[in-house]
Length: 94
Length: 251
Image (cartoon, rainbow over all chains, first blue to last red; front, top):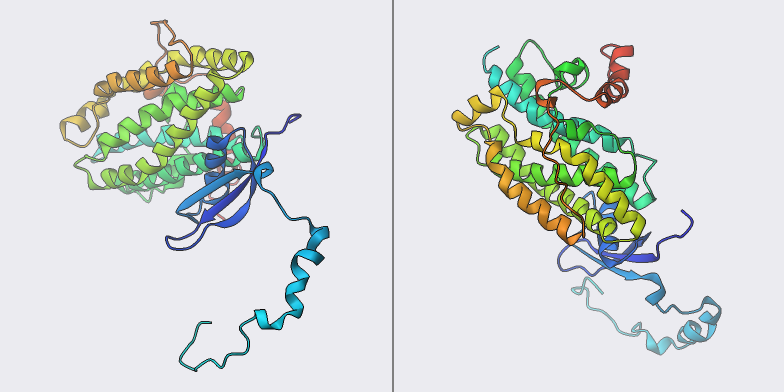
């Protein structure tokens, strides 16, 4: 195909109560078709209860080149991580 | 055979799904793009799944160690009683979707009635299939609208497809002898009563798609009696090749 349909990102919620998770991307001419294609490509084995689609160009992404300034400062500030607390044994899921 | 009418009645429904499923299966790896390829083969698999349920039931009724595979693969062309519509070739994508839409609209109406059948097995198969076929109809309707109300070329192609397939739609509402017996017993669906709802559904979608309903009043028939168009033989030679070449092969 010479002129490709735009790219869409697909988010699927696998179970009620869980959040939508990025599943992958696909091509579609518009939102409605993107939903149907997402249903066929990603949820045909009943993987989901809800689908979001968003055109890839509408996503603003961080630039990997800026990873240093964006993410690294957090690493040398140990006090930002809650690692200095003694957790009682009864607390299981932290 | 005891229950011969029921046996034939089941094949009358199941053969449509088998042949349409096989037609869609031809697009596996050949769809217009990856997403549509997967969508068409998904629909094909839905239809084949339904076919299996029907054939397993029919095989039980026939007895003599008949299996679902015997029914699917080892009948002669004249013994298949699918409607002519479903055996028509894919040609372009407009033909594929028009054929799908013209069948889905009928299929859903049929299943909604079959769900009320006194035969519990048929009612259960219908109930399970309704969800699948509702999606098929949504998918094919969307494509009829999208192409009909699309570009000049897509509109022309979709109108051509509807025009050339329209002649096969009337047969959907013809009753066979098995139909009449099964309707009397509260098992079968009276297809003659589905025609009005069908025309209404189809007209609504075609109108939205800015397409014209063909005016021809001459309709093809014969599939339900085993008299087919030239296309079915080729389809069956693909479908049956493996069992004919390696009889009783299993995998």
